[in-house]
Image (cartoon, rainbow, N blue to C red; front, side):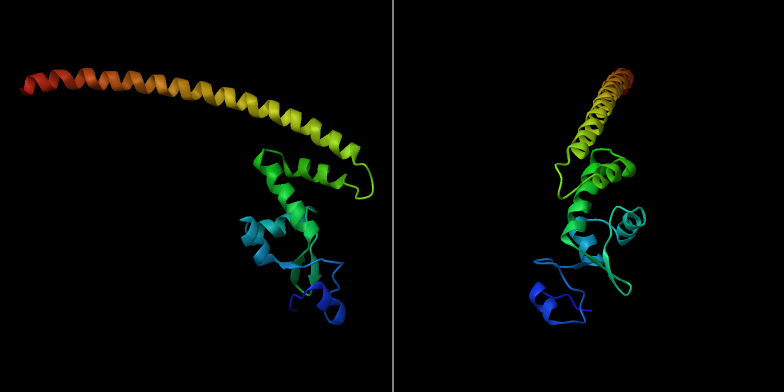
Length: 153
């Protein structure tokens, strides 16, 4: 199947009809555009996070799929589990106010922010410990190199 513009789709009955203004993207283009592997996209589909249209074995991603993938990648970047991301996305209602979705997103975000801040504190402590240890080791090396330099001279 060839990808067509929305106008062409209406004129060609062999193609999957596109909704008004909708264009399809194949899996390879989708993977390349968002820097993920084909396997990742298939995995997200298996988990119910993405639902591309099908033409035989060809996956065709819509604007909705692109938006969902952006949210998945953002969620993963900030440390949400795929389960958390799915819970938040599944509450979306295009005709509603989405207050339940927004409350859940805020609650999960506040908890994740607290986890990240705790991790940052632990990482900063580890960096300080390592830096201090390196300073001690450098001093020891300098002290041990000095007697050898004077003995050689």
